[in-house]
Amino acid sequence: MAALFFPYVDGIVLNVSDQKTGNKAIAYPNPVYNNILKLKFVNGVNKGSKTRIRIYSSEGFLIFADELIKEIPTQDWGNGLYLFEIIEGSRIIQTGKLLIVN
Image (cartoon, rainbow, N blue to C red; front, side):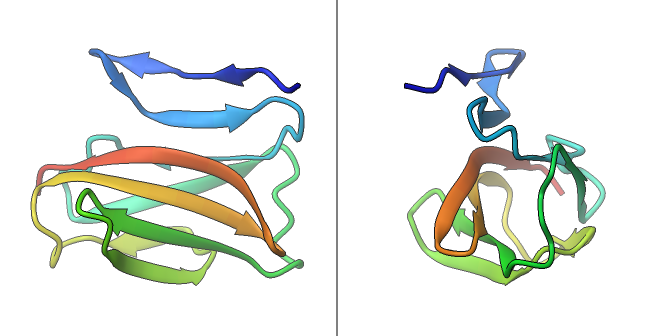
């Protein structure tokens, strides 16, 4: 079984990464305060294999879905907690939480 690591900042889980696969994207700044969420891809995220991101509101509504891109505008999103997942092919390779304070 793969070990899961939960990085904390001020008591908030920011990213969950599966150390077995080693795949990871870093979402920053977190909290998002400038209307732009940025993604940095590290450790073998393969953009050529239909890798995409989905972002959900805390109520479970899908609010964003697209191929992996480096910047996502958030100015139309309300303040609050959002959940994201990064999918490679048909596998979820990473999940995490975002805090929006635009």
